[in-house]
Amino acid sequence: MRVLLATLGTLGDVHPFIALALGMQARGHVPVFAGAEAVRGIAERHGIEFHPIRPDGAQLIADTGMDEGAIARAIAVDFDFIINRVLVPYAEVTLADLKPVVANADLVLASSFSIHARIAAQAAGVPLASALLQPITLLSAEDPPVLTRGETLLVTLRRWFGAGAVRPLLRAAERRYAAGLRPFATMREAAGAPPFAGNELLAGPLAVDCAIGLWSPPFAPAPGDAPSSFRQTGFVFYDGGFAGQGLSDALQRFLEAGPPPLVFTLGSMAVYAEDGFYAASVEAARRLGRRAVLLVGEDLLAQHRHLGTDTVLIEGYAPHSQLFPRAAAVIGHGGIGTTGQAIRAGVPQLVCPIFGDQFDNAARIVRAGLGMALPKRRYTGRRAATAISRLLADSAIAGRARRAGAAIRAEDGVDQALDALGLGPIGC
Image (cartoon, rainbow, N blue to C red):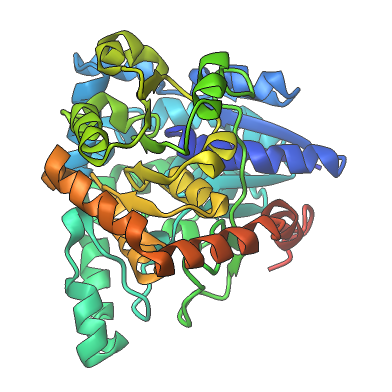
């Protein structure tokens, strides 16, 4: 079968789709990756057919007049930026890019933000599925999300008054963002796709033939009110990034030269809005007398190189699957890709959420007893050192992290996801 995988976003959004594409290849199917031009190198390295869709990062920078840091900060403080400056302005060109490749597909697998792919598939009558990367996408009243900046109102209401008190607020949240998505209703009509009465971004990913949840039960079990289209299949991992597959020689030597270091990372986008995170991390490591590895992004190596010492190594990127198991702890932003890799590595986490689903992911790590949380807006060298010291001293967290890691390493999330999709008539 010819399967179109459509996604836009950071490496945390891209890597799961690459993992699924490789699984499809192994089963004799033909995956086609539709994404930003920057992903072409990853796809073509594995012989995956690639189809570019707009916008990409360079176009956003040119059109907005903002650099990567300004865009990352805008997304961090204003969810409407994604809708009003990314999704809607490019809706027509994105749909135009997708139409020809969707028309030749036997199945379309779209990410939550791929509204355009859903419209194109429904207009062409092609079977449609969604890949959900994090629990917040379910908008569950039984297991309510923790929202931006860590508000726990919905969780508290669920605990005190039950799921019935939460549902109206979730529906209100859907309506709140629906207004900005109205252009997609016009696009649906023009494309010949059936109308959709719900929120295209929040409810749309679940209004499909099959929605696969690519996270594992030790992190967050499926809630009782998950829709009938939903199947939880477990984390899927790919770790090639934009560079080679292995650890650099410098990193390998550093790891072999002493005890396991602390690893500090902000993923592939939040590095552009780090705002002192790495300097504070070096201070925290110094206060604790610990070795540290800072993953600062390939583009920003020169900017952060001065932070390196004999006990602090500055790296742009390193495969998480190879580095995290050799860490004393992972201190990260709570992106789902980084979070899943740290769970699989079996090491404690300090999650420092910045925006979006990261607050919900942080709350779930704490709830599962796999780590602690310290929002990045409160992150200083002193506070980080205190939190990391407590984290490393907690033997219960260390034990649960080891057991969760072993459970996830025993899973085969890719096979479970492909089985749920059926790779033919949708099997959900």
